Length: 99
Image (cartoon, rainbow, N blue to C red; front, side):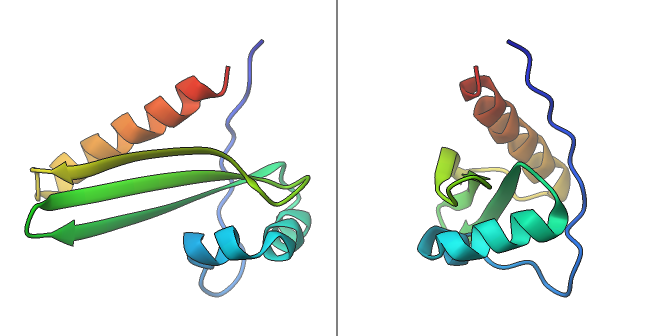
């Protein structure tokens, strides 16, 4: 089956952190209803001496729980262009799980 990924920008002040979604299914359901979306894609990018780590979560609007999680740890590229490329790779990996 074919799934569509049509991103819509977050409407509001600052979007909640992914960890807030993990700890509150009610928050996921509330924001999903307000945004009129089926799922919420959230992510965190962090830098450490070992490299850049990227983690993406796809939360279900139906039950507020994570449907999919994908991550990349200790990526050695620090340039914005490199991180964007790695983020795109992690996103494609996440989407490939949605089959």
